[in-house]
Length: 57
Image (cartoon, rainbow, N blue to C red; front, side, top):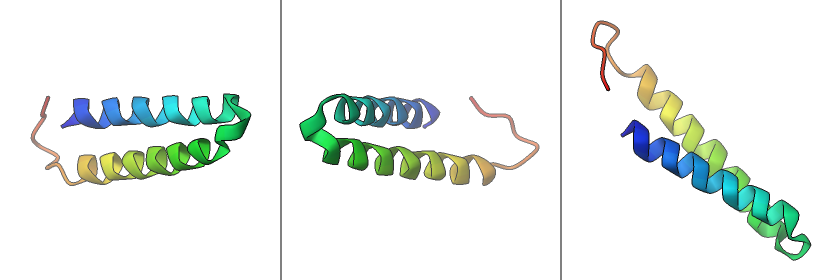
């Protein structure tokens, strides 16, 4: 699960940078930024729900 979240964060970051670099694709930067923040928040919420005594991969 962590690998999927990290992969999505990397993908959204690439979309954000690509949208910022290409002037005509500003909307892509906005969408990438929103998806990046959403995925980061989801990952933070999921990691906080893991029981404290159990260490997972």
